[in-house]
Image 1 (cartoon, rainbow, N blue to C red):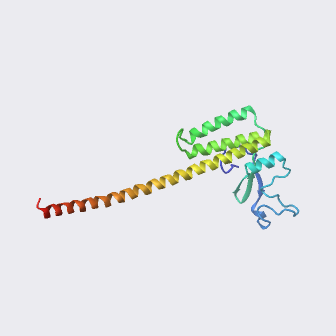
Image 2: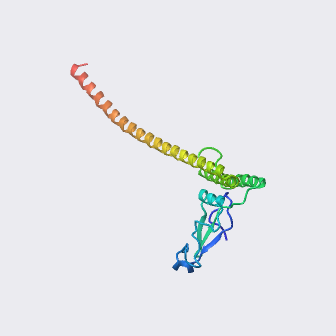
Image 3: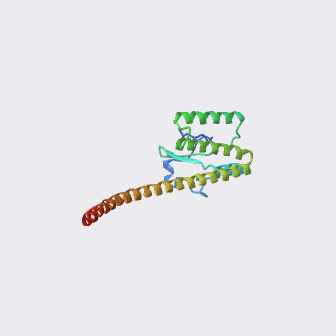
Length: 193
């Protein structure tokens, strides 16, 4: 069983939620009925930390061969070795996916976002309040980057509009110059110069 996407965030083993035979009941099961599966968003017997982790980093869902699989983020505390391995995986992924070292690079941005999410996961397990504060920092950072991207795109569009206006104005000005030079020659001829 291969999860849908590789990620630097640590997840638990995938859990089978439903099969194609359960389609009559609904893919997620019907709460309250005997033998029904719990909804995908909830894991039975959640601790407060696991609940917070699942709200910060929602479980991954995918369908394979008519079966719905769910993978929750791991609530296992990280060791020093886990952090070293995370750094090595990050460096390896940056190299394998040929991320640019400088400038704007979506691959590098994605990998660093996954690394930050994994660090938030690790911190949240030890101290939920610290993890929630890091979540706020992450969300603010994403909003700031989105604002800068919007501003950049707007500036590029403005620059293109101004360049087109300048080109149009230049051709109009050249035709006006040609017309005025013709008028000057006519006036010189009338004066007999």
